[in-house]
Length: 135
Figure 1 (cartoon, rainbow, N blue to C red):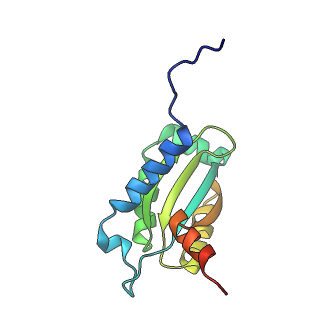
Figure 2 (figure 1 turned 180 degrees about the vertical axis):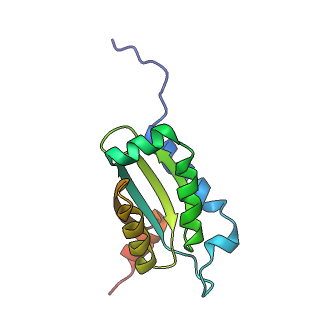
């Protein structure tokens, strides 16, 4: 006989719902690119360097200042989470193009406070529709 406890929430599902909610509630002025199309979404995983850990320890609000700088470069921070494990943060960013996202990642990394890995993120529904299209 097995005894089942209360069902625990799935952390990944909670994370996905939070990201989706953040994307859906973005102001249209930020979501739309110059040509009126929705901007691509990227997931940036970041790891603080020793210098970055010192800066965040002494000035944790610096994280929000960097997010503001991201927005000044024409991108938008949709959601951000602190992580435990291999990476310290995951940031969901909307950027006008791959080139703009590359430039942003290089600029942030050049400061010497973080190392990043960035991935384009395609909504699951869009991915399914693309997979259904015939060649």
